[in-house]
Image 1 (cartoon, helix red, strand yellow):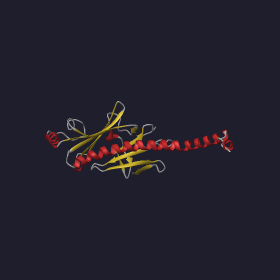
Image 2 (cartoon, rainbow, N blue to C red):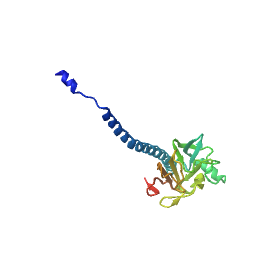
Image 3 (cartoon, one colour):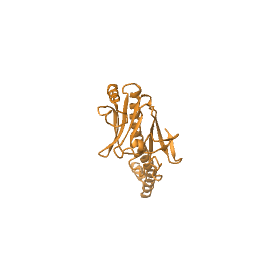
Image 4 (cartoon, rainbow, N blue to C red):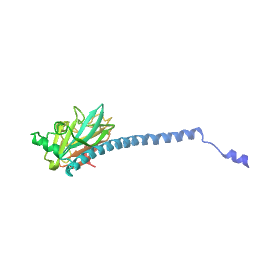
Amino acid sequence: MLVQQKQNIKGLSLLEILVVLAIIGVIAGVGFPNFTKWQQDRKVRAQTERIATVFTSATSQVERGVYPYVRVEITTDNSKIKILAKGIKQEKFSSDLNDGHIPDCKVSPFFTSAEEIISYELDDIKLSHLAENAGAAVCFSKGGKYFKLWNQADTQGNTTLEKDTKQFVAVCHHREKSCDAVSKSFNKDDKKPVYLVNYSRFGLVQKYKWNYAKEKWQSR
């Protein structure tokens, strides 16, 4: 009886093994690209959240009266993109104003002794224009009185959201071949994720994602 049971136990034939492997290959072929896209989107979205957090932190400090004047900076150091916010105390701000200095969002004289509020290094992304040529900066004050864009933030050109604006940070995957939010030039073949952070002079921060099918920014 035991011998008969052993004889009835059969392994998979070579053909059956090949069929199983083929099925696994098809599933992997479909699933892996989707997983890669999901992973890319997650990375870009996470860095976008960091950028939005810096703007929100900076403007909330102004509205709470902790700092009368804050500066959000985007720089590139040794190929690393960094975003940070720093602020100055009321005494320093008043002293510089009384000395006749104009708040123009340059480092000197207002931000030479500023305090860092928050900072991040941004990984695996490109920023449309802003990290080039000495970087970019945006300055905020209560009520928007001394709101100012500096360098690349001021010269990068407009993109269209609800209306045309240059008050944005566009965030692309680091392998995106074309990261140009002004001309809305993104690679339609790869369709890598592109996000955008829009900020207002009064501290409103909104997030968008590029819709390849509709060729426009959609609010998140």
